[in-house]
Length: 476
Image (tube, rainbow, N blue to C red; front, side, top):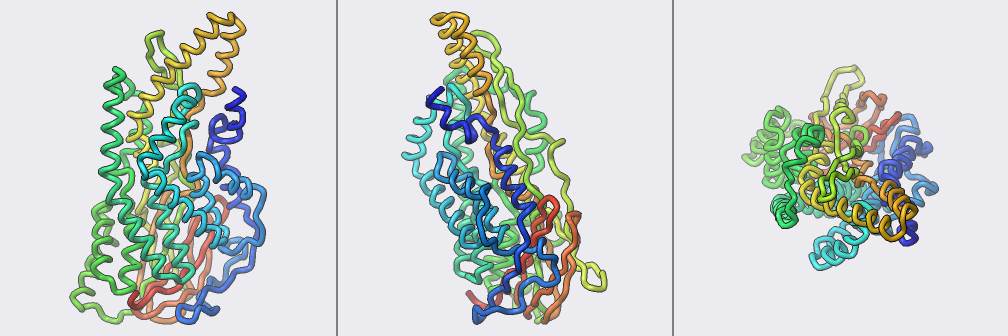
């Protein structure tokens, strides 16, 4: 108990969603700051490409100082769950306009992924945590970022480089995101097979728990894969198209279309790039794309799962997702100053469903650990009763009650839905209106013939955060 008390401030005994609520609230109440102009695409000097006409509280802008909440978040990155806090820090810093802090946090998260991928280190760290986890909860195990989180890290890091007008850096991150998606399928299949083998070795029937996860299955059933992310494919496809890399753009548009085969927008994108490859595309103006992050992804819930042991049933806390807690998708509409509609975003990544699918795929391994944990805790309680009487039994009962916390860790500043739309406009400056349930914003954006202008809009409770990224055009 004395050994474990030092961890009580983190996820071991304090639920992760309650921790994350602090920095999510920070984003909703970030003080207003003056907007810095974007760098000119050619000279790097200030230009008129930055947002205009917004209320200061609704703009993404640098924060001159770090709050106590963010300082605490930064301090948590040194612990066993460091990669999770690094992801949160990268996202929060990005939305606060602290670009360098965001780049550094995401770069450190990627370094942590590389360490995770070194199998010897993963095995050693997992074995070191097993003894503690058997007597506490899964929060004692070091956090391993799931594939969908790793892919979003790469995509948001690409946006960081894009905002700094570093097309080469953005290209590297987009390619890394694509590679993450390529290797994820085979890796996950091996993990599930290994967990099922462990269940068989420990004579644990996983099918007996099926009825307890109807809500999780309903949320997870909205996606086919826990890692395929059409939003990332779409963003990278836009980038490649703007730089004339039509083959790469077509590949990524088609991958996005495979995930959303009924999308008229994606079908048109495939046709447009195919025409460009055949040199049939004219100079019809420039593309404007709106990348829209809606709200925050839902946290894991907790429920009590009865685990059968040789001594009878033992109740353990288990994570899940439910449809009742899932936010509804709300689109962003783009209008011109005459209130004529130009575009409306569509969902390309249901992040809550990705998270639920990931949890569902992890169930076999988690159920094995929970069954072993239930037996270990029962034995601990029986031994205390035998050796120390009623007082020992009472102490272990209290400990078991306090330590029984579901593993609710996940990246919670990710959006509930990642959306996008695009349309063409003639070359020149255009004033656009972004309309969402969180409020409206008016932006003046530059459009370059056969170039790409991207608006990144993020809706958090009570705020609409926006920024216009530097125009992408010409060869890389």
